[in-house]
Length: 356
Image 1 (cartoon, helix red, strand yellow):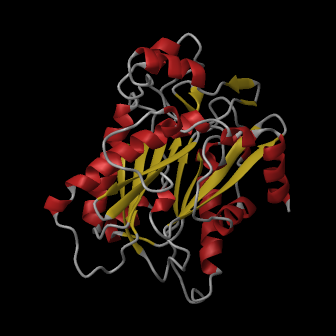
Image 2 (cartoon, helix red, strand yellow; image 1 turned 90 degrees about the vertical axis):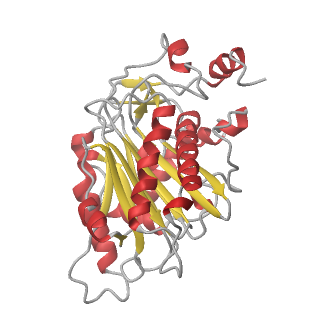
Image 3 (cartoon, one colour; image 1 turned 90 degrees about the horizontal axis):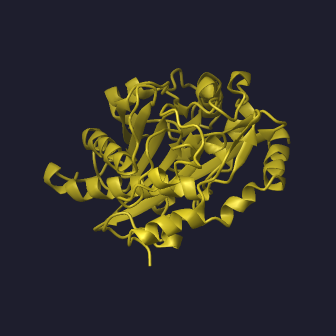
C-alpha cells in the first residue's frame, strides 16, 4: 500500500509530464545507421520486462529502483548467459564476480541508489528464495547496480529503497513501452548538469535485436549527434561534477556466449563517449549484458559479432539522449535540477544542420 501511495504521489507531482517531453527520434535526432525495433526500447528483445518503483516523499526523498528481467520465469532455474564490463570501477555492483566467473545471470537485474545496494540485494534474495521451485536453494547471486543520487536531490543516507520497493518493481515489470526520465533508479540522478534518469533504445542487426537501458548520473560536456550542445548551453546548466556514474544494461536475442557478451558490454563505452562523457575518477561506468537465447544449438562466431557491436554502440548513445530528454525538472533537498531545455537544444541542432 505504501509503495502504491508513493507512486500515486509521483503522478500528482507531475512526473507524468515526462510523457509529454520528446524522445530523440521525436525531434529527428538519429544516432547511427541501424534501424530501431518497433518500440525503440530494451523490451524489443522478446521476453524482457522492465519495472520501476519511484520514491518521492517530502522535500528530501528522490530515489527509486528499476528492475530488468531477462524473462518472466524463475531465473535461478532458467539462468541466462551474462557478463559484466567495468569501464571505471568506482562503484558498488553486487554480484558481478560470479556473473563473470560462471557466465550466467540468475536473478532480475536491479538498478538503485548507492547506499541502497545491500538493502536491494537482501530483498532480491528474499524474492528469489520465495519462488516455487527454490525451496532447497542455498545460494543466490543477486545482481544489483547503482549510481549515487545523493549529489543534489536525494537523502541518500536515509537508504529508502528496501523490500517493498524491490518487490513492487519486480512484480510490476512488464513488456511494451518503457517509462523513461525521472523514474525508478533515475528519480534523483543528474547528467551533464541537467536532470538525468532512465533511458532506453534498441537496434535490429539482421535477424537479431539489441536493446539497451541506461541509468544516467555522470558528467562531461554533452554532445548530441556530434554537436557540442553542452558547450552552447553551459551558461544555464547546473553543477556538473563529472562524478556520479552510469549503468548500462544490454539485452539481445542473439545466440552469444558469456565471452562475447562481455565484448558487447564493452562496446557500451563507445556509445557513452559519443555523448561527451568524461570518464572521471569518480564516475563508476558499468555495463551488464545478457542473451535471452538459452542453450542455442549454434553460437554466433567472432566474425559475426561486429554488427551486434554497432547496434550496442548506437542504442547506448540514443538511450542516453532519451534519459535526458524525457526527464523533468526536479526539486529536492534544497536544490533544483533543470530538465534539458528542449527548444534551445533543437535550435542548436538546427543551427548545425542536424535538424531541419
